[in-house]
Image (cartoon, rainbow, N blue to C red):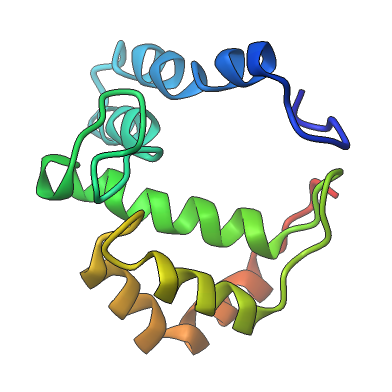
Length: 133
């Protein structure tokens, strides 16, 4: 499903949405602190600031900081990267999307940090290119 060149149907989307809970369940079984943090990130990276996300419909600061940072990073990476169903977005289009979703999808403070540190984000992207294309 990850490489399907078109939109997912309802059944495929329902299966895809399970990855947050599956990842959290898998990672939370570890006693290692870093994997406990990864479990929180996996479980909450699709929650939205306005409460419309999944799997729990958490809102605002109910979402752990790991999930709030992860949500922005996940979307930034997805939009910037080549996928079988889309070309990478230009940086300015990604930044416009983050601005539009500030306070809706994303924690406003995290968006502000990204917007204030675009050069740093670009450096990281260049040093760690997506090799999945």
